[in-house]
Length: 287
Image (tube, rainbow, N blue to C red):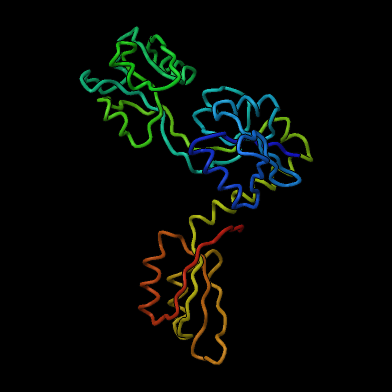
């Protein structure tokens, strides 16, 4: 079995489980507290803390894993990134109290105390900038540290920025952008049997992610307007055109379009006389 490490709780866990289920690999839990679950005869999931997943993968306890890019960088472990899953988007930023009036990390004085749960990333970042700092490692709620005198600034994850604003903190620099990534162990990728299963898994998940940004559109179009149709909906390899039974003047056009183009595409097709327009979601899309 190929062993897959997944986050055991939180948004990353929920979105990862949904992605795998849509790809046909639904976790079959034996109980609500189970830390392992069969997904198929070839794939097994183990559920651990997201921050531990790079360690599990690097050490070979899991062949592949899903976790945040920020945690992969923080771990510093030797793993291979397979692809970007796109969800769990956030950024790791430097933030200071608004009252400090500092706009750049270069303006921070030597000896600045930095509170963070990312000591590895933070220390490397400030070292590269030539700024001497003191680290105050915290496990959470870094936003309160400057107000308690524990630290002068923080390095923390930011999603919308609302938590920083509520705590009267201002971002002065983004260290890195993060999303959920699929990673693999070097050993697993070098093993032909496990590599085949990893490649199959990547293909299945990429097909689901690709489909989420697309829609399948069908419409009946006057045959003499096909040149216009090709301009409106070029599709992946051009639209598929099918004759409509007992309607010589009409053809059925089937095409995959970007989700963001659906509104304009429908309007443009209506302008050339299209009828019976149907738009549906796509579960998987493999080019």
